Image 1 (spheres, rainbow, N blue to C red):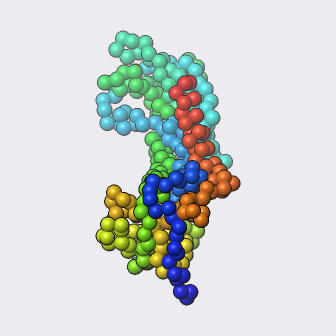
Image 2 (cartoon, helix red, strand yellow):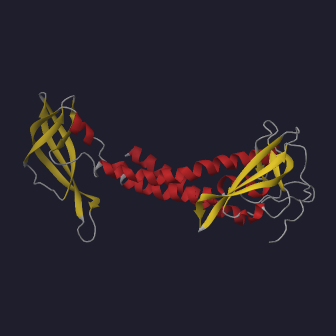
Length: 299
């Protein structure tokens, strides 16, 4: 096994605040596996949410556990939707059914959805009505949205994405703050543990470093990565600790974008050819889903 190289003598400008190029800010906030995977999973997960979760019928428990009245109704019209249920050649279309009914002396209209059921216009039907809210009604055996309530389970997909994304953005914000304000020191690796997570069949390692902060206190910093080589190639790894809280630190080599220093000790901007690809998935997710939400609200 190769011996670690001696600790680098970094020419980092010692007095904060330092100038951090925008390319490094963007790389720290959007780069790294957890950020990119989080945005990708969140973006695709939200597509399933808009299609299925946003069209799930959540009124089922109300009809099951609160008082319900029934009344005769009349079918006013039936429309096909773009939705269907089933697969393997057994797919059935979902229909939207408009109907009229009377409740408490009022003439009302409602909409129900059914899979494979398309009654003729003018057909008499049975309407189920919430006793405490007579404007909430459905045809017996149908639902009030395109899919059953179980369709809301697709919310798990964007939530998994957020589970990666939120810590990634939080760590990115911490890194950019310490790049600008942190005090430079070095840390020595004191423990190396395998976690129960893996990325691309590579186990994620938990590396613990011990360092002496600028106030003389001894603290520990932790980094988790599936590529630990970059954090194990020196006898002592450079890190930046928080001047307001010396126990808070970030390893310089763990910051997404791999900050580099010029001879004057200032951070070098990253080439935009490496930054722009990091922004594609986040921008598509933000612009696409925000735009869809606004269009939905304006309909």
